[in-house]
Image (cartoon, rainbow, N blue to C red):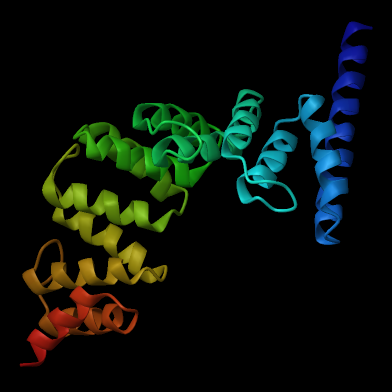
Length: 236
């Protein structure tokens, strides 16, 4: 009997969450922001983390209400407490940049970690950045790896740089080149630039100035200044 009651309670909770959040999103599409906020406020009061986060977004953007990052962060904190990874990310971002709170990168890292554990891939990359900045390269590599495996392409480049330098991981030009290649193939031309450097110097790949030249041109065409410089040098 107890299991049946718990199951019914969970089903009711899921239904309530879907109805309130769905109603809010539909209202936003129709630009009925007053109704959307009402739905999110009710969801938040019911302990639905995403409702708190959506409501916080209104205060953070100042859309149809006075901009108030202090209120937004309080709502993001509630969202995070109730398991909403996007709420954790938003709160981490505020601490990292001093928006509505005193800048505190250590606190930002705490919330990025919660968001990362909840499936926010960008948070894993940002956590890697934090550890890299404090020169804890082993942890940086750990979170860059998680983000790269989750297809956050810039994390792959960050991880590639660690393999190239041997910081936090066993040095491997070959692994670095593979990571740059993955980024380049996925459309990140800064990855193409780094792969071009690898081909130019024969680091982890067979040296080829012609391949390097093609990669530098690809990076240059997408606005990577370093790619343009290297391409022009090879043209001479």
